[in-house]
Length: 252
Image (cartoon, rainbow, N blue to C red):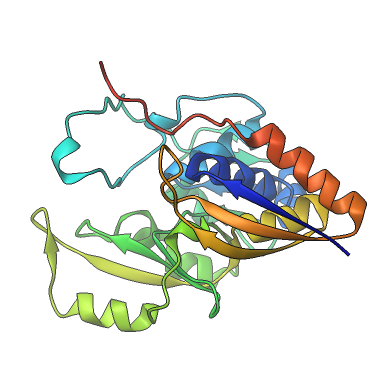
């Protein structure tokens, strides 16, 4: 058994998670014969790049976003781009909300998350719009049609709190920027850095710490365990990913 330590920044984690999602068997199968719908979100911008095998302006593939309260005008967000929906590996010009009504057990819906209880394997998505946003418009169809729900989410979003209890607290009435804030608990195929490394290299990973400075805020430190070849492959993969630029750059 070989053990090594690796540190990933938030943007590096997003890239790693996206590679893991792209290599899930259910995703590869749906790309060959089926539908893959990718809801908008910061991590899912990386997923889009991995599935299309080309770069995009990820700042236009977002909906809700969290910025420092006093820096709302510091960043430039271009107009939104169309949803990415792939049928048999080819782009089709429909939204993810439209697509879900044509999807079934062999198809994949990919949705990023805002919170994760890793131990209980439950994630959550915040809903700030009156209609519940993308997840509000799709979750019942996803459940009814038994669509594969893939949830890419970084360990940085981990919480020890009970996500169903949080939902109840918010249901009692909490507003944020003039809108009621709600939380939708989700279960599905959760892909964090840990799952991505196992999918891609076979190593087992354990989080041993988190956080940092100088751009490593929100970073995760992982212990990698496995056969020597597996760990070396994981180290090579991480080295290739390290240096992934931050999602946003300051205007100036």
